[in-house]
Amino acid sequence: MAYIFCYTERCTGCRACELACSGAHERIFGPSNARIRVVREEPAFDIAITCRQCEKPPCATACPTAAISKRRDGLVEVDSSRCIGCGACAEACPFGAIHVFRSIAIKCDLCGGDPACVKQCAPNALELMTSEQVAEKKRLEHAAVLMRPALRKLGVK
Image (cartoon, rainbow, N blue to C red; front, side, top):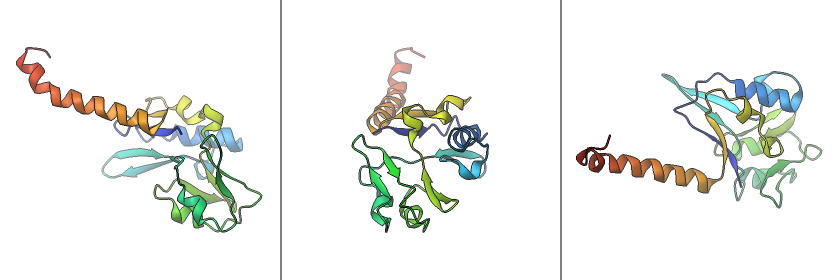
């Protein structure tokens, strides 16, 4: 299942993703009701956090009313009619990617496969990817680092 991956080296902390998300879901621009959250780690590192659409979602296990479930396509979703707003899901999420807003748990739903946050991210810090795609990019980046000394010896810059 795909999720929204954040390239921390590109994220500027502008929070345009939060505004795009809240606008797409609530028709108002307010970060408190966004399904994506930008977190700043001082001195100046920013990362956008969203639901990772876990294979075995701890939020669903923690929900006392079974309001959170995993669909056949892999998307983890909240049934707002069953949610009691207790926050057990938020406490269970290891990524901090779910929170309670107006007595209902909210989390990323990938905007039906075309995430508003990804489209509005000017520095291109967000990308819809699977875990396998993320791992492949990391392998390629690591291989490039490992190969630099050998390439320098060959005169390649």
